[in-house]
Image 1: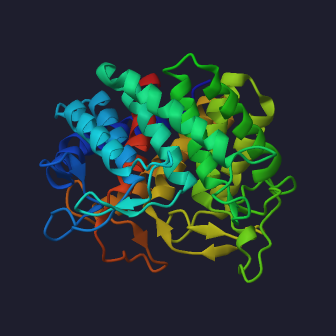
Image 2 (image 1 turned 30 degrees about the vertical axis):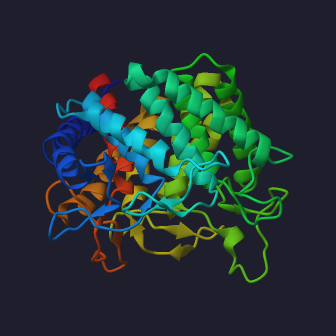
Length: 398
């Protein structure tokens, strides 16, 4: 039975999807193609100044490059007619030439002169490298073989050098603490992206390994909440002077893991993953959203008390994605409830967009609702585009 409330939610979702996709195509992608890139070498800026509307000169973290590749190529799929393929191809070439180290991993950051500033290994950066290569392989046939080879080389390097004896990967040296769930979340995402474009079973196998690690270690067996930091044996981190770091649970990551586990659980017909996804969403929605600002907090403690009341833009995008994913796998009143959350999550994101010039955004909202005065970070574009893509796709199926 279709109720008035479900009809209202459908109409609101379709309207939100149309408006957000229009903003992306008409404002954000033109802005970032004009201000966020350096045509001379095909590279990109770390951020764009909200006053001058120009790219900010300074170090460029490795993680932003695959994210920008994804943002432009996914934007093209959503209807942008700009030179997405050309931009992505140049970013890919610049990324490999600049960040790939002799050790086989991608360095952490490089300067405006394209010389590496920080060559250190960071599992998070490797995860996004694999994700970027999957995006290239899916969208640019002329670069597919190159992307496949680079992804295989990097994955082999991770297995040979950084494998954890139980499951997953270390953060560097064998005794480096803490181990982290967040890089594995993006490795999980990269594996799912590769599954869509490759027949190599290595990607499905690693996705299954990370899903099992999440269900058995990352997610607390009592509360159902997703932790961030761990000891070397994957128990919650208990390092000296860590200020309770092992207790951290981020609402945005409850939502992001819910989105991923829902996707994986449906593809594997794994009921435990779907149950976990619902619980993660419930935690994020119940405890992680500020009733006054209607946005997600940055961090909770493991008793679900607020640890960091600042709201970051990316948390709102993950709320959108999780609400969409849970709507898709639910029926009846439960589906209606998740669908009703989607416009609220979109509105939370819009607050960060409306407080900035067209095509840009604010990143941090204080507890009083004011925003930090800082440039728009390029790293947020990936989050925004992914949320809009999920929203747009869902709206078209309603």
